[in-house]
Each structure stands twice: as structure tokens, then as C-alpha cells.
Image (cartoon, rainbow, N blue to C red; front, side):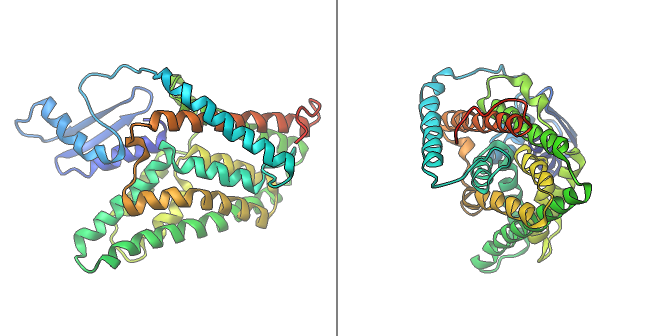
Length: 334
């Protein structure tokens, strides 16, 4: 597991199993304690059966704790790919074709790229798993045409985009009410950089202890969002899409923190909307075709590449916030 969203997903999926009365997952210990009535099944048999429930989301269960191992060979491919992406970013920035990052703010291009990376991270896999589970719940009750199966996904994504726009605007307006000064803006901008740095390190999957540093909103909110999928109502997918704004995803939270510093409804709304648009392509594939990047053989290379790029954005934002506050002179000319 990588974050609190993984914990919420694991507990929610196992809690739906009829034999299970209670499931409590721990990100710190990377385990889950399951209580229930399993008859004469052996622990090995129980672990194997419950693994089948979690397998679509990329998790497996074992009685013994698995030793963490790092596949260092992935970096031989990930580093050149990440370096190429960063070089392309710098070239486009130099040419003035795009304006991803300025010395004082996160541009819409940055929000889009971060959204794109977030959509294929293990944090966002929970959103895809959520909509798939919800759709399956609808399918149990509805044996109608195939178009009926597509409708929940469409409503989910529409609700998600609308909520990120409106709630992002609300956060921006809230920042205006607080009238954040230069110090407040610096603190929040610096915090965004730190969060991105932690997220990037976690994506590298080299330092397991770094997972404890990842900030999250209270876990009970994530559980409430997952609980919505069980309510089989026409508007349920739409409401679940809206509720994903509150899921414990570090990428979303970093953008929400930045949005607070804008102090403007329209800027905040546009930033969160563009971030949500960035998550849409891969998330749509995940929900419509059950695509799971975490199950692919190249997932290690992919996540390490994404991690290096996110670390770059984190360091860049840290430097930009220090420059904007006047603590250090400009280091980059773009």
C-alpha cells in the first residue's frame, strides 16, 4: 500500500465480503487484520480467497510479511526517460511555447501534468477501483442494455469535473477571505513543493519509511466516499464523482493547497478543473476498460519515471517559492 487511499480501498473491498465482519488495514505495518466466520478454511485458504477480491486493484495477501526489495535496474531506463521529459519541458519553456511554471505561481500546464501523473499513480488507482466497483454494483441490479453500464462512468466523470471546478473555486475564494499575505503565500507554496517531493519519493518505491510522511485527510472521509458506491441510485455515480474531491490523494491535496493561495474563485476553479482534465484520459481508460498500469510488467519503470518527474516539480516549486519570497536570487532563467 502507498497511501491512505489504499487503506480505505482495502478495508472497503474486504468489508464487502460476506464472511468478513471487520477488516482493519495498516499503512505503517503494510498489513490487514481480518475478522470473520470462515468455517474450516485454513489461514492459507482464507488469504488466497481474499487475495482474489483485491487482485483487480493490484494487491495480494500473504500470511508472512513480504520483504521490500528495490529493482534498481529500472532506474537505467527511468532516468533517461525522465531526463528527456524534463529537457523537453525546459526547451518548451525557453521557446515560450508553454508556461508551465513561473516564479510566483503554478501554471495551468503544471496542474495538467501533475494531474496526468496522478491519474496513473497508485493513489489514483483507488478512484478507478471505486467507479468499477460502483458499476459492478449497478450491473447486479440491472441486466438491461450495455448502454446502461456506460452511464454510471459518464455520470461519475461529469460529477468529478464539475466538483473540481466549483470546489476549487470555493477554495480560491476562501483564500481571498483570509487575505493571505506574502508570508502565507510563501508557506503554502513551499508546502506544495514539499508534498510533491514526498509523493515523488514514494513513487520511486525506494524508501518505505517515506510513506509515513505523506499527508492525508482523515481516513473516515475516504471510507464515507467508498460507502456511497453501495447506494444503487441513478445519481449515485454523479455524487461519488463529486465526493472524490475529498479522497485522501496527495496530488489532489497539493493542488488544493496551492489553490488556496490564489485568492480568486476563477483562478482556483480553473486550476482544479485543469488538474481534473489531466487525470481524465487515463482515469477514463481505467474505468471503461479496466486498464491497470500497476499490473503491467513495466510498472516499476513507469512509476520510477513518474517519481523522478514529480521530484523535479517539487524541487522546482521549492526553489520558486524561495525566489519569490526573496530568500535566494533566481537560479533559472525560465
